[in-house]
Length: 81
Image (cartoon, rainbow, N blue to C red; front, side):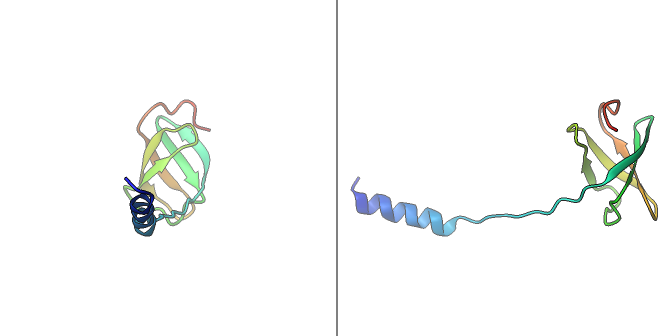
């Protein structure tokens, strides 16, 4: 391999590189009980949307209310506050 070939391959890879950005919404758990978290601050959340809690547990938004969302926690909910 010569240096020109390597440089050309690197240029092709750089040109094809695409970055992805995402936004993150943060809510506040205001109540937790029996595997259901009541979360405020996520007014844009849609039904059945996935939610990740700070402890890494995942939940699913089911109950959409005007000022809060009910999220079913799909794992150990005892560490969520």
